Image (tube, rainbow, N blue to C red; front, side):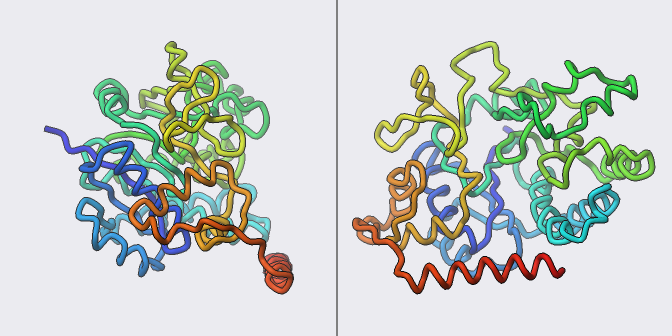
Length: 334
């Protein structure tokens, strides 16, 4: 029988979000499904302590595979037209870290779902695993519907005569939530992909230095894809973004407002990890569905859950403003 599990990418910086995510998986997906945390970097002390009481949660340890994907990302992005801009040096480094998600293809699970850590799981994934009997990849996002800054340069690809827009668009997707199978993207596959990207300059097909945009390129040829947002079943087509889509809360489970359709997850993609750390300490931070986040964050520590929220004092606000200004200056210099 195929082993099934969940991956996420995390470190201590997103600790509060990770705890909430793990608890949401336990409640809304399954208390028994194994979860493997791919380390974003070496800041994992809090994470290590947290999973000590979670026998079904582990940390990915194959450093060689992690390095293989980081090296691939670095080499690819250094050949991107935007790489000549100094401001993108730090971006390339962060995208190398995000590329670590791809180690899932050489992990312990035959079938897997990967969630970003800034996510709360809202329903079981049995249907997703069943779809992997037919498809190589399963997605649930609206990247294909974008009209501006699409993941791939559609006119440029069309000009090659290889693919039309109607063939390309359904294969555009995000990297924050996807399901697939162990064994894809072998070293031989990746070597061929790298050759196409660098030597044949298909790197110019990718519109920005983004691991999500690169992922759309990686799956463009030779793989079958199912995207719930393109499903013929209207019940499958829902939103997932915390700041863009309206949801209804029923017993700390969110549903698509239109039709009360179940959603796979809520994704806090445009909110800083610091906001979740602050609200977890009782600071008044405006986060959509804050009560739902706090429910899962303190599910196992209800007495620690803040009940009153206060604005930060003036000195704290000034200090944060100065920190932001200094970071902008440093980025400009480097």
